[in-house]
Length: 296
Image (cartoon, rainbow, N blue to C red):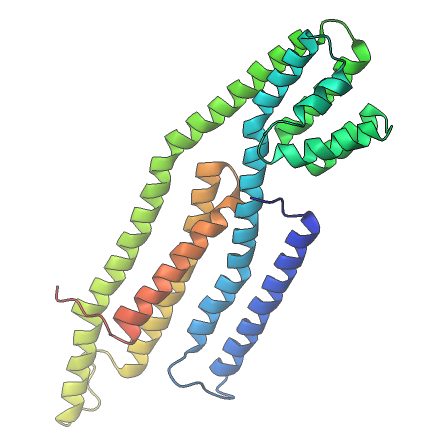
């Protein structure tokens, strides 16, 4: 997957927030009853506002994060090949240039650019710094610092690269182990969210709607002032309340899942998008429109 420049990410965030604000303004106008759209409520626009705010950035961050993972995953191979090339007697700049001819996934295009700069006579340290500004990951920055310091100090540089390769491999192994250990907790968060949705559907199917029917039946036989059951206004208030609870639950559950699973709250935006979308569709189909009904 390609690298997403920071400027592009900022533009996507800005456009997404602007679209979310527009949807929020429309929701406020609907709530103020300045106009109406058949079949659509202000809460629908609130859900749409949040989805438009977080969905595009979540896609951009996912693509960029996959690119960064590809950079880090290929670093050990690059360091090993540079060390092997130096054992054959090649200088460090020449070893890097030869390595650029091999396939290191997302690293390859950036290595080729750096090799081209070196061939044009640009000093190795300047080309290396330009490389780190583009392939800007934590592990890659450490490796770049190591390469520059090794070039300055001289000596048995290939041994330094061997040690760096093992260090990077250990870090990647620890990351993979942490992700595998935390993955069950992500599924637990999803399970908790789906249970939350199920409870809401059960409440409306077995309690709120029967109570609303009871109120209507008493009203039909002349007991309009009865306190038995739920009035239409009260039922609608519960619908809005539980939809908003579903949106909040999906948003923060997704952020927690991202923080636990990948160590970054931004990684949870994709989980939040999925949960909010599922919760909103479930609400529309089973509670508001009642296109899907369950007999509990």
